[in-house]
Amino acid sequence: QVQLVESGGGLVQAGGSLRLSCAASGLISGINAMGWYRQGPGKQRELVAGISSGGSTNYDDSVKGRFTISRDIAENAVYLQMNNLKPEDTAVYYCVWYGSSATGDYWGPGTQVTVSS
Image (cartoon, rainbow, N blue to C red; front, side):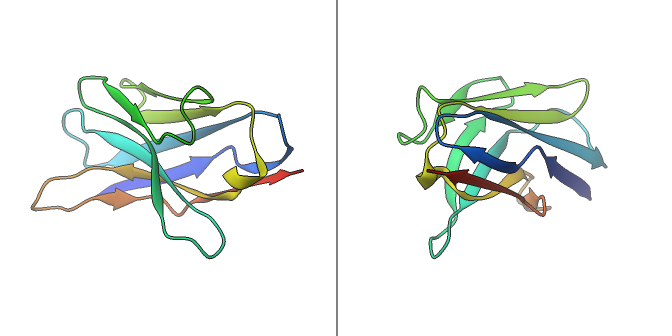
């Protein structure tokens, strides 16, 4: 089992910044790919950014140039720096630890990000 806890969400004005953190604990062996998803009001959960075990990153087009995903392998943590936030970024943000076919993926409980116009 891997437990994930997100933090850093909150209320911010459009154009502002937030930094989300996700700390993983539990039965961790090796370096797994991790990512951030979000689910806005009335919307499906969508991938925001991902980082592979080798450190490669990918982003949804809507956040490219504004969001940056990074990780601290020693701390088993992943971060999402969000700049120039827009009202459409309002959502619950979830951290995911991509497990194996045997274990499945692990998800955090989510952290709310609200961007006011």
